[in-house]
Length: 314
Image 1 (cartoon, rainbow, N blue to C red):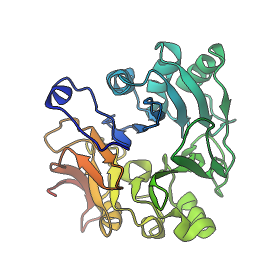
Image 2 (image 1 turned 135 degrees about the vertical axis):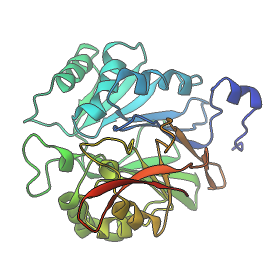
Image 3 (image 1 turned 30 degrees about the vertical axis):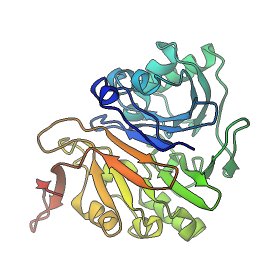
């Protein structure tokens, strides 16, 4: 297998040179979107789009460039149907010409949201296979070097029924094998909160351990403290602007739990600039992240109990 090489010309054109595995965490503001590409012997990687952000620009401005060597998205995962995860996927299936192989979703039955219904209508009109994935290990015929393990496929946590849907998020792990005796893992968590965090830890314990984690629910304070401990990630990515005055994510107390083992990356900096982060895994299993994390915003609980925004300098 070849090692990662990135030419200056490719960088200047914003055209990615594929690593053996590449995960792009897209700055979607107070929303979620990421693209994982796993190189294959054919030269066309297996591409997974997880959530689409809250606007067309989140995916529309990024995905075509990431697919320059790969015309197809093999798998789309909508972790749950809130608009900050769905709107960009609406563009993907209704407005773009990008082929999509299949869709996983949590199969929400009690949600009535226009953007979710538009997404489902687009999937149906293009006859894209869609399913609630089994909670098991998934392999894909014709593709090698990885599998996906689904820990949660929705509607399991006590109190998770209804239109909120955060705890119903699809939670799955990419298990990439750059060599027969080596595995690098990435955990995608949607917007799960404390009840589902705790249930997953009770069910799976150390099986949740992952090298890379997408921090649940934009770094919300609604979490089970044992979840970051069980995951024990080396790299933790937070999709949050830090500027939303309604939700006030991410919380410093939450990120401190991940910081015990992981380097923290937040997709919006304290200068209010978007930051798309690219994590690469080469064929020796080495992990790198670009760019370097600049200062970013967190919310801190003061002595009076109020929340104040603070700047963290890595």
